[in-house]
Length: 453
Image (tube, rainbow, N blue to C red; front, top):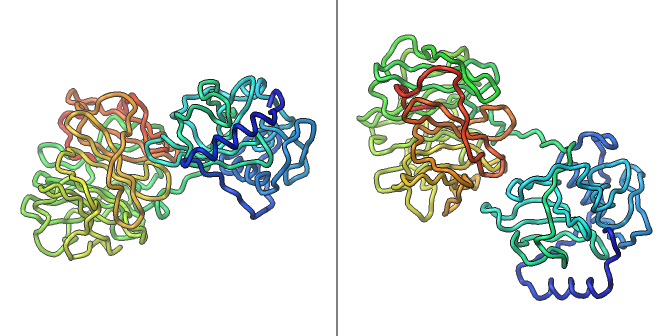
């Protein structure tokens, strides 16, 4: 802090906490050495920042602006709020609430991630740990505003005060040298990644009205090649009404699955070079997929095999578990949604949008809303969806497709407009996407392309 916290303030803080049933103060008792993978004043991952914060929390330190305490490597930091953040960020010196912004970039609260801070310039700073709900209305944080270091959870982002200081005094900042941790998509991610040509970049495919199935190679920076080439040298996809892509047979190559109006579900095996087998074979006995639309592919139940999901005309969201050999379970689909109705969802996509290692479902409504239902990792999703878009309208966007197109470890959403533009909305890694889309295609027109995968 920039000034001492008086006994009166500490008493008020304790009273405030006691009066609020929504506030949880977590005490951790396990003390573990934190291996520093970062250098002093160097790049540091978010997970290391949180681990360093936890290290002092476990020590139960006494607040003292005139005192100091070492991190796990022996470097001393001042034992107050800004000294605590300086230690967590692995800085070379203990900063103050006035000097922390000079090492940081101001961000919106909606963009807060683990290791960022909420800083009250003249009074106090707290270290953001995580959002506690999908709607980003409650969060957890670390604070050294009294004795000992505290960890708070389930705090409303709209609370009147944080640690007895007015909410409005705090601004969100991000350390300039903090970096996101490397993200492993659900269950290794390779099975759900749409990479037809095996170059490690996410591609896009779609069909033309004459039945051709074409692929546009991803460049790994959020753009795709200007022209598409044939994925299936022979064969006609004109009769395929819904398509989805993933590694269904477990050979490490991206396959294509599609259903016909007669209810057949077929798979075309990927060759790993940007082409697929000339003929498809049945993934499911019978012709019961006729009533299923909006196909999705991901490992929804966490068994390491790619499943297929879709909605029925009565609004149910069902899942058919994958067997890992290019087929899905022959039984009726399992319900993914215990309550709610997907009948009004016009386009669906699946990916791990909130980076929790579980496959989620996104969908748009005719009124332009884009919502996400968080996956539970057990073959089900949350009963209610929340908005993925802070502002904007997805009503003019069709043929949604998801993937990490810009290779930043976060799932993005792409789609086409009626004028043929192919746009991408970058994922933020927290279940939301950027408010505006940008062009993935330097030239060309996607208006004749449908069924994007």
